[in-house]
Image (cartoon, rainbow, N blue to C red; front, side):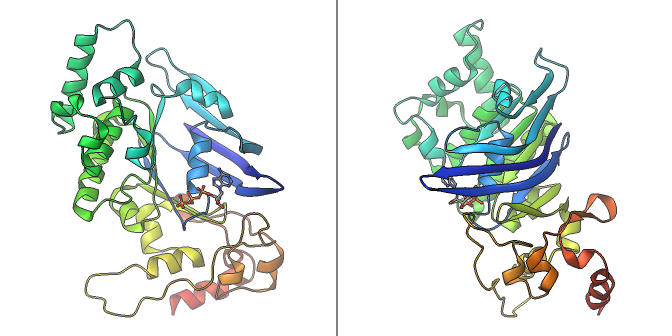
Length: 330
Ligand SMILES: Nc1ncnc2c1ncn2[C@@H]1O[C@H](COP(=O)(O)OP(=O)(O)OP(=O)(O)O)[C@@H](O)[C@H]1O
């Protein structure tokens, strides 16, 4: 339903450009939760903005296309390209941005924020308020939040209100950017449960950006691993956790703490490259323990493995494939 083909996008910053997204191919399917993971600055939020059609200065799309197909129903079906995806905001697709406090109007009660977002003049206000209260109730939020200002709610409650606001009109795709960041683990679990509940009820698709692999493990169906503006691996989440194919993903997963495992966990040495002047070849090669000459020179192609699992690494192609498979088997 949402397809990115060879997408490249950059930010203009005075004299320089930051190539935040580079040749990305990705598909969001019906009724799935797709997770986007990677280190800070790898382009996760930018990719999400592009999928949401939020393409405005200093960000521009320099190559490729983003195509949204909305199914029949509600009089909003059709195919929308790039910036035109904005025509589907709220009803067709919606966005739960990072930082609930910053995106809500601090001087407006939650009720007014719902009325502004829903913006259905044909509906009687009392009826609309009743529907909103019923929806909040379904999501286990008290109706009293409607009379509150954002600062009167806790961080977790504000985030839940934002999710309710974004999903009230039953959009076909919900984008959530770091929905659990800066919340303690108990509140985090509540937010993840709420997202799962909305997903099960509406059967919509969700795209969730998080740098927290634990969050992806708990909630996503498929996972996309980004590094330095590129997609290194995509596949069913469980497959990626059980059998990560890209060395970067392997290192990310091996660095996760596990109950009963007291071994010292090592972080990934080095730092991601600058997106103003990224290295030729594989962008992970300066940090990769398997780096060879071809990795420094040539960008690896996408290699599709079994069951919709893709990784982009020279170890998965040509002669090195067999020796890598042998080494992994040991
Ligand atoms: N408005 C902007 N102007 C210039 N550069 C930007 C802008 N927004 C982001 N960038 C740069 O684009 C790159 C990708 O940023 P992006 O926010 O998409 O990464 P991210 O993976 O979401 O990071 P984080 O997890 O820290 O939010 C980074 O190098 C960042 O500095």
